[in-house]
Amino acid sequence: QVQLVESGGGLVQPGGSLRLSCVASGSIFSINAMGWYRQAPGKERELVAGISSVGTTKYADSVKGRFTISRDNAKNTVYLQMNSLKPEDTAVYYCNADIRPHSASKQYAYWGQGTQVTVSS
Image 1: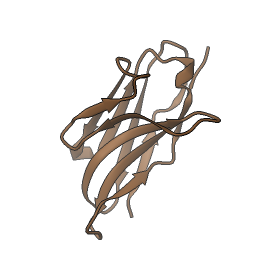
Image 2 (image 1 turned 30 degrees about the vertical axis):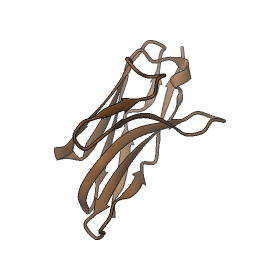
Image 3 (image 1 turned 90 degrees about the vertical axis):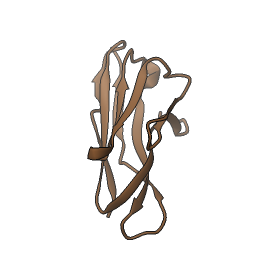
């Protein structure tokens, strides 16, 4: 059984910083792309940042220059460093990863349970 577990969300003032972490665990053969999505109330889930298995990154225009995605392949972990946070960054943040389990011949998309980030004074 493969699962993703996020941590690091919380309440922060505008201009502050948070670091999200997501650990993949279970019977994992390989992990390809990993990423962070977010969903604000009444809005669709959107891609925030993604990172390939070799470290190529992409970002939503709204977070470029403020957020940094990184990964530690030895720890099956992806991070999202969020700086200069704004109230409009408030959302539930979800971790996503394309993982091939040991029991399978192809990869599947897995999601974490989500972590709340609230930016408010």
